[in-house]
Length: 480
Image (cartoon, rainbow, N blue to C red):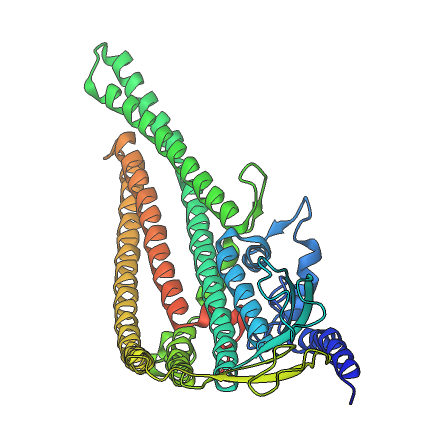
């Protein structure tokens, strides 16, 4: 084949090979999971896709009343809490695409201009005819990829994408937990506020009673002043409850990516049905551990450490490069009157002595695998310990709820007793008001105890993976 034709073929390959590779990489390279519910993400099954498609167009309606599910959907669409993990997932996929491209060599072209600074050989008989003239040379070279390193690097990046997906799912799970926590607290606040609305009226009745007593007896006692202070106390308590509710709503807006100044209508009672479905007797920690993101992550990290060891071993492979230029090797010098030849060079480069650098790299990778292996066992033990702590916390909250329910029954009986005594004339109105106020406070404590029980259940559900499984489904069985 003539040299000029050979150079043209090389140039055509350099131009068209990247274009072909781009089409292939564009078809096979994974993309960032769809913002709408991660429906296209590998390893992220969608169990509520139809519900999502029906809900998303209505999420931004001006008169929309947000249920718990709606708020979860909204948070996945635009929550700032999920930005970091989503960006890290996109970065991992870009690294995977980059690893795929590393299978191909990177052809490069060199343009060299040479000019004489001195002309000591101008009168020598065997000099070239163009001696002393400016010379231009074109050359081509390419560093061939290390096939072992490139293959295992691609596997590492593919696993890293799976880990990034798991990390993003964990972030979504944390967001769902916080939304559930706020919804339960808002529901309890709403019920407590409804009870507290009656306290100012009771306080006013007590104040009016003591004012009337003082006007009849013609003297001023401390009871009226205490009743006035109690009336102020109930008003401040209502104001405090309203501020706490506003703080929770603002926290939810920020979590969902909504401007805190905007109005957000919530169906606060909607989160109760999620807790109602929780049955701790049907689950155990060993079964749930196998279905958690943490288990998948630590198990995958051990596999990733194996590939890292192979990457360290791959550094023992020599560097290989090829080049096309007009630099003649020994024995190929041209006569002064001849034309320049073009040569193809294949270079294999490897260190004769690296002072143990590559071996130490392998040993470090092995130690990292040992760390990953022990981290897997430690994570499993930590999960069982947290499971026990959540179980104990839920049992304690259930006992406290029973105590609050029993105290409520006692307060109801005492109020009935006071009501009977007031009708019979053995008790005065303030005694009846006090019994009624105690009954209201007992109901408030009963609601608060129920809230603590629900919060304990929600945390347990999150640990078991049941809360996020409701929306994301089970995690992938294996990261490939």
